[in-house]
Length: 271
Image 1 (cartoon, helix red, strand yellow):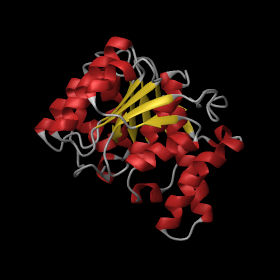
Image 2 (spheres, helix red, strand yellow; image 1 turned 90 degrees about the vertical axis):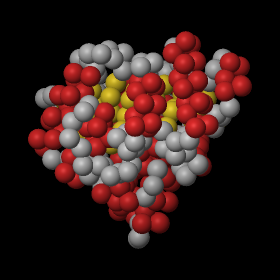
Image 3 (tube, helix red, strand yellow; image 1 turned 30 degrees about the vertical axis):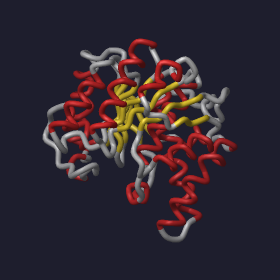
Image 4 (tube, one colour; image 1 turned 60 degrees about the horizontal axis):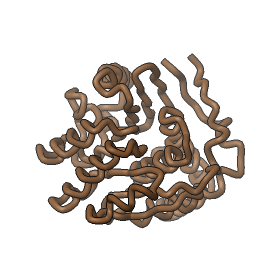
């Protein structure tokens, strides 16, 4: 079935949502700038002592498990609890799920609070669904990205959505899968160079949070954010020489692509 989503009203954002990010030091600046480039406002706040006041001001929350520590675990879990209490739109990025028991335990505790979006690469979400996974560290593996593996993961996520009916799942890779309790979409934009600089998945999570904070439907926010970023990568590939230039051009197009009818170039299908 052809993809039937109206993404034309997503970027530029209608408002300037304030997005709280609890994330890792490696990609913190890239994520903050990505939010600014699309018209959102980042606040990289992870001190639980200010959450009570902060949650009265923010529009969305991003929880990223990259660079997990004992201190960050406390922040992630406390923010997740506040988000559940206040019904704050929340993205949980299961970075490195399957790497260690403690990372898995923290991830599951976050998912138990029924976040709006749960995302990860295909290998991470295969681990999450207790399927065989070939991922190493925080990187996906091409062995988990064949057609049979992708269909298997889509079915497993569909089953998972019965336990988490208010959560939409996004699995990223050469093809992306978006699954809710009643819809499944496969997407095929992007270029392989996006897998060769750090933080691309983190930025997608930030873009989703921005769209949620702008009042977008969660399923469409996941579809729109991952495609918008992938199309920025496609544009960058035509203009860049070398990976450092490709990274610059991809991030630069976050503020430029919205001036075009980018949604017309989205490729995908609903299953």
